[in-house]
Length: 269
Length: 285
Image (tube, each protein chain N blue to C red):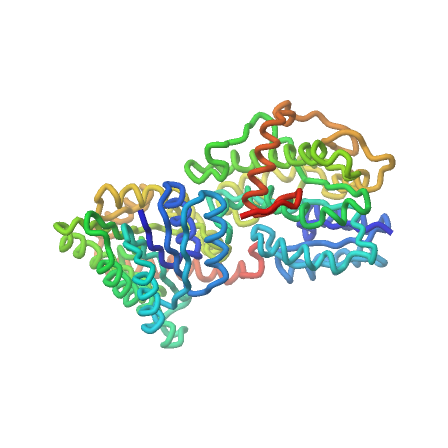
């Protein structure tokens, strides 16, 4: 098994890479910076003794992306699985962000995912290929103050489900992962703490999410929403009108952002 | 003058021990995770002990890159003869959920155990020169648990408490194994049982239930200043105290599993592999 992981030195990417290595899969890791990638490569090799290749690539830069896939071709790597983990968000409402930040969310979350998925499919092993696309619980409703992020994740969810149908007869499965908050970084932990009880209820255990995601993807499942509270929220999101959901969520995120600022990033630990 | 290194020296037990050791006349090199907390702790310490000889080194010890960088900095602050009298591996933490470090290791295992292992290795020659002491902050929670060898990082079924208990058992096994392997080195390893101490350990990056539980429980704990005396005792007492595990400056009972030599050796070798080092200087991959 050879698995390509994007966003591999971030919290979820690391956990997914570790989970794959635990299963004995070989890995090809990428992320934007070299140094963190080499550390995770080394840590995984020491723990599990699998083969780990690591190569930095800015997925929004077409030249780097081309060089990255040229490297894959040069090494004659055939892919069995693609984990599209790379994704970003910027905290703050639409008008409080420079426009470049807003479009960067679309570039990383949507454009890069499409480009990588397309290029990886061309280099897939024909017997069987598995794709995981990281959407989010945020894909389930319009979220004021996270408008672009939530919409980008909605795009990924719909795209993922449609692509899965399209490629069904090509022995390709596509799974959309829709996690709630994940305790990946000190900032993420702070963000979860700022949401109070909602943060606790919608937060998923990172190791469990990683394990069940790979299992579900290999079983041919199309959508995986970890946690039962999140599942209920999804159903509610479908039965309640969008405009009302937006109204409710606006209040929730506004409160959370207020608390986030009050707690302050300097007091994480 | 003695030189003492204390990790996690910006709050709680570490800060109290830093104060007590500085007051006893030692040069203290503290390690803290962020610049801000280091500066705040230094100011706090200078108020409590105005003539303290204190230096802070910043580093996130959950990451091995930072442990190595901290070790380099510490060595630059040692006296010219390179003597280090005591290394107090005190930094530790609790995480309610499974999280991986930059090296892809489970955080409690990496921070509570591996960081101290690697730092001890990096400062080993300096400790040997001074016939120094390595002190780990342990806990009575090392009792009634065992090494989870099939998955030491608890990546499959994470339990905050089990991972914490195991990391504290690791402290005991490691101290014991250091004493066994390096009996002739003159270096002695100890573990302190701080007892229940009123610090913020359970409130840092845990959130929700774990944090709320700890907020109630910590109120029943001792003051860190009381616990700090055990560290002063283990650093300064002559001749070197004979026992492994100390509480309130007195030998304390530990779990019989700590005497399992096989486990201790296995942990030592695994830790060498996960840190990419060999204490005997042999080659590593």
